[in-house]
Image (cartoon, rainbow, N blue to C red; front, side, top):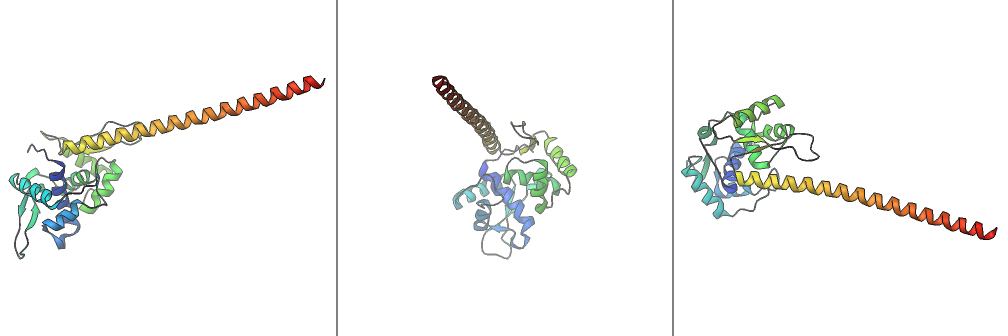
Length: 217
């Protein structure tokens, strides 16, 4: 299934995936509960401030894509379930890794293992790699490896289901790396300038003493 989602659609469906596993007692979710899940300040990157209308619109669009469905059993309030796993043919550990990438942005293997764990993700790094290979080995890849940034020792991986989010997080990483490089260069330059000034002051002091000794003789 070839699929491209907006940042709001991706956040909505990934939040449904997360809550279906981490808080099954409250699942399926009402629109208000889902709104709170989407706008969480923890376990989210980037932080969003979606409105109820935006979440509702995304749900309607996702329903047309068969990625979510309505569930009104035993409740007056409209509730929603995801069909992410079924429609994309995802095994549970693979779905957990993809949801973690959508919710938290680019991550290393170690970060992915830790963040996917609450959603019943892989137990070890080998399992995370296997999940990433599953997501990448598709007609339309759902995840991939990011170019190594300056100063990074570990590779990072990103989701590809929402290009606008993937691009913005990559730009943020480039800016962060450039900023770090500039700060390092500025610090080194400042240190060199201070050393030169200290040496110049020392030379001036020595020249002054030498001049005084010469005058005395």
